[in-house]
Each structure stands twice: as C-alpha cells, then as structure tokens.
Length: 253
Image (cartoon, rainbow, N blue to C red):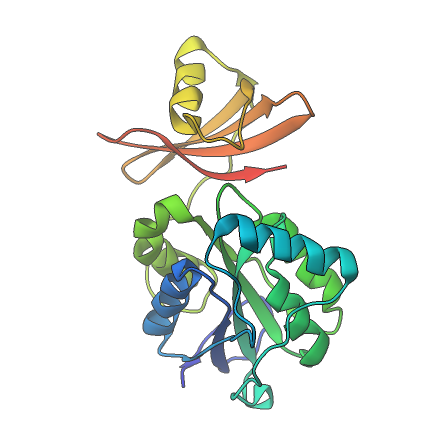
C-alpha cells in the first residue's frame, strides 16, 4: 500500500488502489505500470460471464447491453474501498466512454468522498468523454484529470505514466513542463503532410487538417490539429519525435 503526497487540494498522504477492467490485456499493462510506479494495491475487475474475444461479438453484446440497460454481473471486489482515499480506475473505451463493466461497478460500489483518477486505453480517443461521464455519474467523488493511451502506443506507457504521476503530484521528481499551445494557424503543406502521415490509413479518421498549433516537447514537437471529417470538426494530437514517423496520440470529437 502506498502513501504519497498529492496536490489539487487532496490530503497530504493518501492510500491508493489501482482498480481496473481489461478485456484484451492492454489496460492491464497500464494498470500494472501505475501499480509499479506507485507501489499501490491493485485489483482487476472480473466479469462473471466474460466477453467473447472476437471484436465484433463484443461490439454486438455491448450494444445490446446498452440498449437494454442490462450490464454485466461482476465478481465481488475483494478490496474494501473504505481503506482507500484515491482510486485509479482503469478501463478500455467502448462506444466513446468507459467499458460496460464499469457501469456495473459504478451502480454497485459507493465512491462517495473518494478521489478518482481515470486511466484508459482506446483506438483513437475517449479519455475526455469517459472522464466527463465518470464525473457526472459520481457527483459525490472528486474525478481528477486522467491518463489515456492508444492501444497502438502501449510501448510509450512507462515514460508517459512517470510524467503523468509526477505532473499530478502523485510522485516526487522532475518532469517536463510543457508550454501551452499557442493560437492556431492555417496548416501549411508540410504540416498537412505531417497530419496525413500520422493518421495514415486508420479507418476511424477520414479528415482533412484545417489549422494547427504546435509546441516543442522533449525530443521533438507536438501538434494539435483541427480537422474536418464531413460531420464536423475534430481535434487530433500528433507527436513528431526526432527521427521517428509522426503518430497521432488522441482524437477529441
């Protein structure tokens, strides 16, 4: 069990639990990175009737559960949440928000008075929307800014988790303080090419960049593109590290 100093008006020392659901094992990687960095307790959320590993089968079942309002039964949580001040709550993003088993958890477990730190894995995005949904679902808890990572970038987790925890005050130590993005400007041909290379053939993004802001980060640049996908404007974060191909890290819809 970890005791750590925190900021944002939290207690000077807090007991932390990493509590997560992982269908394919990707969210588990993030959960274990958090646990190892913090030395916190950890527990996996287990669905009594596991989802089919087939992607399409999971989509079909998930949609049926949401339309009927009947969410999966979970095995009882072994940890006593009364023993913890801070809950790092992890999940994959489904349908733009937290995975269905988390809905069951929120309906059956009392998070009143807790500080909840979301973390999630996704194909293109969903940290913002799922965090907002958590805050609305847990009005008696404090939901802090969370951490999210694309499944395609899971190798970046250890370094990003270290920075996230230090920036949030959960770990002591130095971290890169990034400047705010400046005002955006119309994309140049070079910047448009960076956007296209980062998005590549990803099937969920069919968009054309219109404007961009950029800032220097350790070892390269980070871009925040606005792009039109025919349905409206999306925001796309792109990381261009020195000597590497640009990659998009998150989409905000």
